[in-house]
Image (cartoon, rainbow, N blue to C red):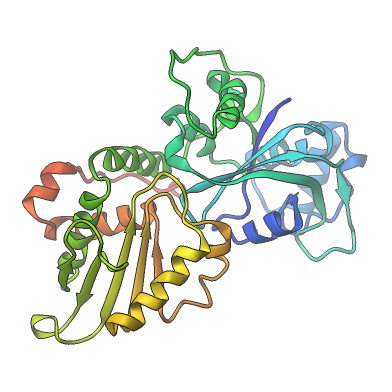
Length: 342
């Protein structure tokens, strides 16, 4: 059994299709050729150079290394790792079908494999940092092998997606595309910061952190006392002394599992009770797919923040946060070339 990283679009735009249709698609634009006819790598490379004649040779070679596996290397029984771009979670599936090509499909859904998604919405924070580095490879498709990843991920699956204690054995890279892929440094940094914050801010302390962020954004904040709060951890509003708009009801969840639809629906009822115009639901471990699918329907009333959203708010408002928060979360700003840099 091998483990393969697949991405559902640069911004997760294909994620719902992957999950709902129980498939992985190779989403290369305009790749309407039957890959089963290109078992010879050099012939595939020649065809790609023909189809994408405006691209650089090294770019075509990189694409070929990611395009080839769906038809010729991925096997039934292999596992798929699908990091979510919509929440701070990861989905896992098992390949149950052979390579399929549909020339009449809408672009770019010509190539697919059927997948049984056996674990969805697993929080990123559950994984050791080195595995997250592999999941952050700058590739749409690659085989995950570093640091005994296959055995460790299988053990986590058997242990309710928790890491078993014990020393980590380090293995040499296998001959696959992961060993030649750069890691998304921004994503890796966010994962490291996320793990640090959740160690220091749990429960009521996480509510305090969110309250500080909202104050930094210019809002007046009421923070309920510890204990029963009727579903309103925080209330925030604008205007003089907080008597203006927006009036926001906030729920904060720092548990180690994504929250479900019932929790998000509860927020709507609490908003009505306290007279809030808007709601903010913060879940450090993200949201289950059932909640994500409602994001658009709730756009004008409720915002969802996962750990990545909270970290972005910390970055954007860091200079305005209290000295205590800055001491608890010591950050340093650095600059680097983007992936478009020459």
